[in-house]
Length: 280
Image (cartoon, rainbow, N blue to C red; front, side):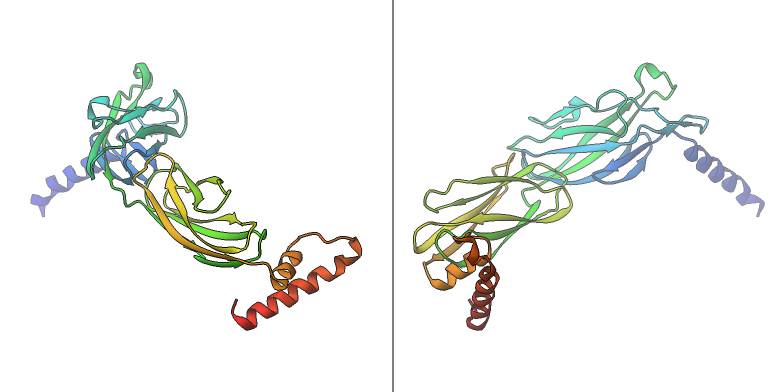
């Protein structure tokens, strides 16, 4: 038993030292508490995309006392950045600190290590600087797209909504563009924000003014990386019919005079019942 006492004492001393050591609390895109020269995996990012590393300014000094604004800025060590990458340090005294890193558009797939430094300016709180190693996986497979429906039957001049779902599995919050290519006289692009590690559905309306069958493409693309995009083949059949006119009226197309207004809901009901019975 006595032989183990020195080992136990050393372990207790080590744990006590760690408990009172200066640390950096990472809050995004993943979370973790790291000590000097620690390593953390941040996640995946597409070539050309930007992401933020967020960390708390609060830490402890060598004696274990809490220092609320211990770290004054968070920065990347430039010599550790791969070719073509850039970094923007967090503003002084920001809490939480937000370091922005932008990858190069031509970055090959792979795992890259960036050295990040938490700085106590002029060592005012006697903390010095703390560095960590942040691993980033660069890949084009950071987003999944789905579109519904892909076959549409509408009345002429009647807008229909297409649902686009973006599942952003990466760590970038860069915007995406949604557009349609191949519809006559239609050139509308929507910009949406798909936050990292989230799944969201967005509505994109389309319509045509002339009857016919239209084959077109829905396009979803990253605003910062041309390598991250998807095209979806779409088919729209537009025709003038009493059924479509009823449906359009029920959804808000105004009839004149106003005395016809009470019939709007009935028209929509009739068109919905017919479509349900005929699977349209």
